[in-house]
Length: 219
Ligand SMILES: [Zn+2]
Image (tube, rainbow, N blue to C red; front, side, top):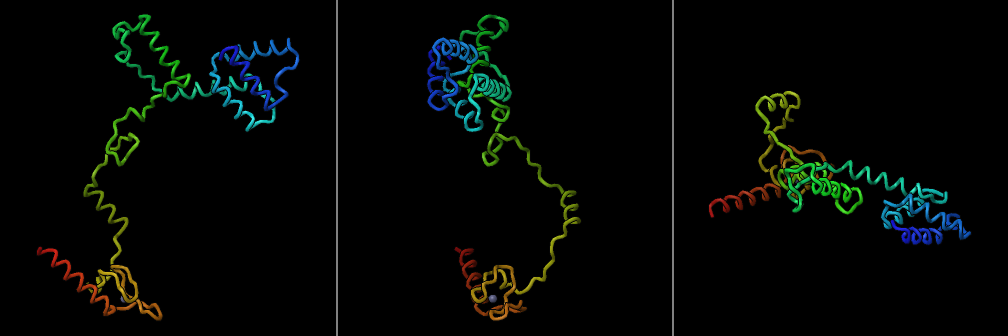
């Protein structure tokens, strides 16, 4: 932030909190100098947002250290998320074999600076991982292993499948009379008791379904 931008920021702060900006001209000049020095690395836009966040959380008048602290936290967070991959080939004036050359160091420093300053998004490990199938999404690399027979035996022993009497085959369709779902027994419509048999209209529905199926098979 330049000196002019610091004056901008202070005049904005004066609008929302009259305790911050000095009234005396000499004091005001000293204040601008100090704020500009503390906030030298902080972009004006970030400082403005930091002021807003400060007053959302605190009743105290804002100090330049409050803004600088938020900026440091952001820089640390962004550099922490960056994996630090640097591709010399992306920089035309960099000799990839001259790792200690001025151009290489300058380009590397510029990249870190851009990530810290927020003009370049940090690339995290997650984005660098190859995506396995779009359904898994998010670049997550997952190897799905098919269940082997040992697994199935163990699973069956631990969680035996529920055994059910097969019942009449008409149970495979929805019952239009009592509303029973496919596979569930019919229930009497007045008392809701489970029936051993089925409603006649379910048999009709079943036979209609069979007819439709077989017609479909032959066409
Ligand atoms: Zn029924």
